[in-house]
Amino acid sequence: MTDDIIIERDGALGRIRLNRPKAIHALTADMCRVMLDALGEWANDPALQAVTIDHAEGRGFCAGGDIRLIAESSAGDGQAARDFFRVEYAMNHRLFTFAKPVVAFMDGITMGGGVGISQPARYRVATENTRFAMPETAIGLFPDVGGGWYLSRLDGRMGQFLALSGHRLDGAECLALGLASHYLPADALVEAKRRIAADPAGIEDVLDALSTPAPDARILAHRDAIDRLFASDRLEDVLTALDEDGGEWARRQRDTLATKSPQAMKVSLKLLLDGRAMPSFEDEMRQEFAVASHVVQRPDIVEGVRAVIVDKDNAPRWNPDTPRGVSDHLIDRIFAPLPADEEWNPA
Ligand code: QUE
Image (cartoon, rainbow, N blue to C red):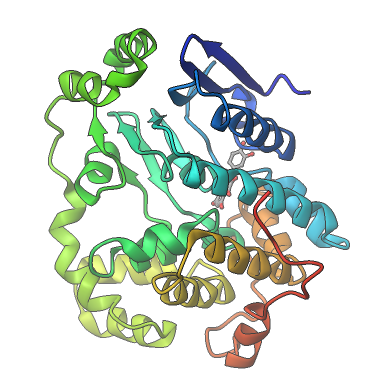
C-alpha cells in the first residue's frame, strides 16, 4: 500500500486522487498498481457508474513518472525501469478500455504520465492552470503512455510538433486541439465534483453547465507554420525546413530542438508514424513497451535526467550527438519487437 494515491468510493462514483505533492503527483509503480487494481474492481461492479481522477493536496495534476528511478535503473540492468513501464502501461490501457465514463481534472501541470491518465478519459477538464506537454525528448525518452496514439491523431502535424519540441499548451489550447473536452474556471471544480458525486450519470450536463468560454488558443496562430515546417517524418528534413524558413518563430523552434536528444526525436517521429496506423491501443502499448525497453539500454536517459532533473545544468551530452549519428539501423533495433516472454500484454 501507499499514501501517494487515495482511492475512494462515494455511492456510484469511484474516485482516484493523486497524492504525492512533493513530486507534483508524478506516478510511481505503486501508484499505477493501486490504480490498475481499483479500475479492475470497478469495471466488474454493476453499482459503479463513473470514475473521477484528480489531485488531492498541492499544485499540479501529474508531472509525469518516476523518472529518477527510470534513470537509476537505466544506469544498471534496466529491470526496475521495465517493471515500472509495464505496470504504468497496463494501467493506461485499462483506463483506455474502461467502459464507464471517466473524468480527468487537468488542473495544473499535466505532463508525460499525466497525459497517459487524462487522454484516455471520456471527459478531460482543462482550466486556467493547465500546463500540458509531452516533454520527454528533453530527457532522452519519447512520448510514451500512448503518446504515439494520441499525438498522431491530432490534426495536421501538431502531434509531431508537440512530440519533438515538448511545447507546453495552456488550457485554452488543449480545448482547441481536442486534448481537453471542457474548459472550466478552476474555482468551479469543487462545485463540479460535488454535482458529479450527486449525479454520476449526469457528468456531461454538469460539465457543460459549468463551462466558460476559453481565451484565444495562441497555438492556432502557428498552425500553418507547424503543418508546413514539421511536415516530414524525417528529422533532418524538419530541421532543414526550420533553418531555411528565416522567420523568428521557426528560429525559436530550431533552437529548442537543438537542446533535445537526437535519438529521442527520431524515435518520436517513427512512433507517431507507426502509431497512426496501429490497429488497437493494445498494439500501441506493446510497441511502446518494446521501444522503452530498448531505450533504457541506451545512454541518453541517464544523461538527460542528469542534465535536466539532477544537476540542472541543462547541458546534456547526447550520444549520438547529431541526427546523422542516429542511424536507421539504430532506430530499427529500438523498434524491434521483444521476444514473446518479455513483451507487454494487457493485465
Ligand atoms: C521531461 C520529462 C519529465 C520531466 C521533465 C522533462 C518527466 C517527469 C518529470 C518530473 C517532474 C517533477 C517530478 C517528477 C518527475 O519531469 O517525464 O518526479 O517531481 O516525470 O524535461 O519527460
